[in-house]
Image (cartoon, rainbow, N blue to C red; front, side, top):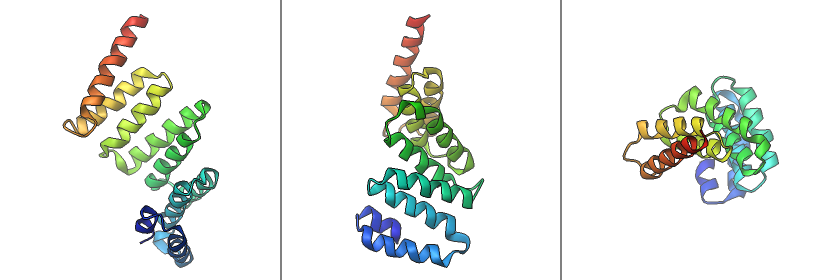
Amino acid sequence: MARSLIALQDFQEAEKQTSAALKAAGRTLAEAQTVLANMRRHQGLVEESLAEYKKAIRLAPGNAFEAHIGLAIALNEMNDPKLIDEIAKEYRIGILQDMETEPVLYYQLGEILEKAGRNKEAVAAYRNYLRLDPEGEYASAAESIIERLKDENNDQQ
């Protein structure tokens, strides 16, 4: 319910629902913590969201894929080029833990790596996107980007 309320930007009601889930604890505690982090990010409270994502990761080590992806997105929103390695690492952990079949995550990872000038890694990420969703929304863009990055690599050699 909190996820739907966040999408509707009803943060006050989402806060109530998330608080109730956190108090209930149990198996869903890490997920509730991640939802709280998502809400903070959607509210523009990036620093707070970072702390909440890290709590969720501590609550479910090895099984916090959504928190790792959320953390990567929040770090990316900080627009700090020094964070590129950490952003890429969080995307990769989230993908490996349970989201290796989510093509859009590979596309987003490719964008991050491309921005960092890590063209070879970016090409690999875009290829993974195409492998999973060859007719997808970003397929033609990914194909164009791969060609451009390969051309840039050839020009630099």
